[in-house]
Image (cartoon, rainbow, N blue to C red; front, side, top):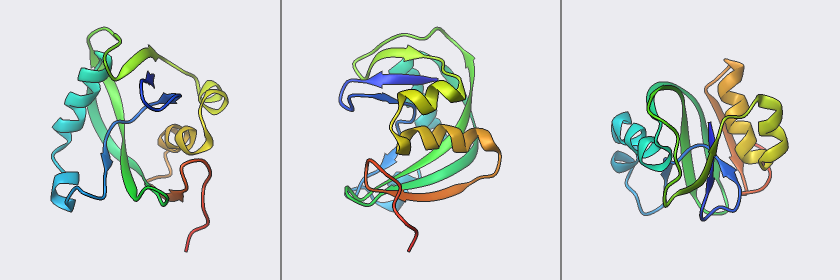
Amino acid sequence: MSFLGRGGGGLAGDLGEEHPDVTRAEGLQPLRTEQGHEVEATGIHVEVDELTGVYKNTTRGIVAQVFRCKPVGSEERTSSEATAVTWLTPDEVAESMSEVYALRFLDALDGAGPHVRSHDGKQLTPAR
């Protein structure tokens, strides 16, 4: 599932990011917080599964921890955070999202995670 966020200008799929002004403990709150956020933004209740990747935006200093989730109920809807909600195939993900966001979905599907990647907000950056 992905959603068209109001602020990002493109399709997205995860809402939990660790910002520079958030402590490590706050950033690693129980997964029920992320589950609640998905419901709030999209109307879909999810069951949180395994960690599939950790993605650092080196430009903004934001770390996103991405978990595979399974829908378990409710109907999709729009909200103040999501102007559209849609279900995409892997090919559609690659075609409709920027590289760094599409990779989060594709990494979650490949079963080889968790992946650890860095990017500048637009492209992957080399590991240091």
